[in-house]
Length: 145
Image 1: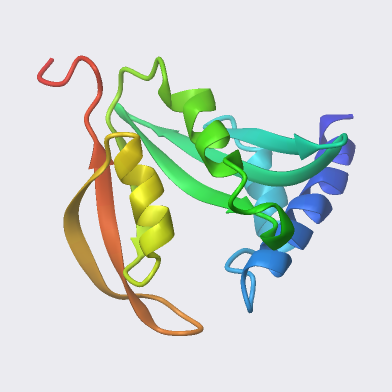
Image 2: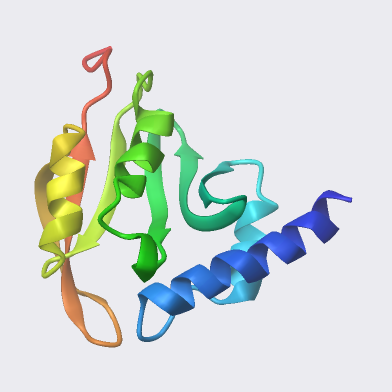
């Protein structure tokens, strides 16, 4: 049952990515495979019962990684990205990492609002178009343990 529900959900999420990006960075099959992994969690933003945004994280040993965050273009600027971030970050005790396009100042500003700091640059990390990624990190509440 979970796989069938996830197939429908993967199609919805792929449509969101296709709306946000000129070319989706993830295929529908990649989204489905990720959703079926025990290490992955997904959070959703709704407007009138329609999923209009999502955030996914991956649990790694001793840290988390934000693997995806996207809100449909028509719903951007309404605080949904902040809602998605606050859904999982408010009580998070582990360090959290993410990558963001160097040109995506709006996303970087959102992440900084939640305590993320730039820690490195990954040259030519993104494709279509090729661009550097800024690696950002938010220390966990119990950093140093």
